[in-house]
Image (tube, rainbow, N blue to C red; front, side, top):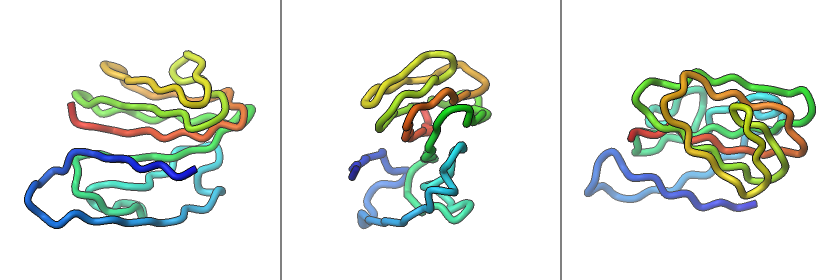
Length: 121
């Protein structure tokens, strides 16, 4: 899949940029791998936005638990497969907006590929 994702910039009036980076499947298998961030943390792609983007792959008993910062929103997009998100079953193409929760719990996947966005409100 090729997904083009737009996030509002933290600063305006600067030259737009484009970055692409491959992350090995092993780094996303059964966990959430930080793939884009405002500071390039953990080898992620640098972006001019107050947001963090995670990617994960889940099957069977694989699960992830992500603490959610207070006062922010979390957007979950299930690219393909099936996955439970905080106890709710999603199927490929579904999305969920998580607010006022302390944690994001992902599990019981079946061929699941997921993107998780930590966003300012």
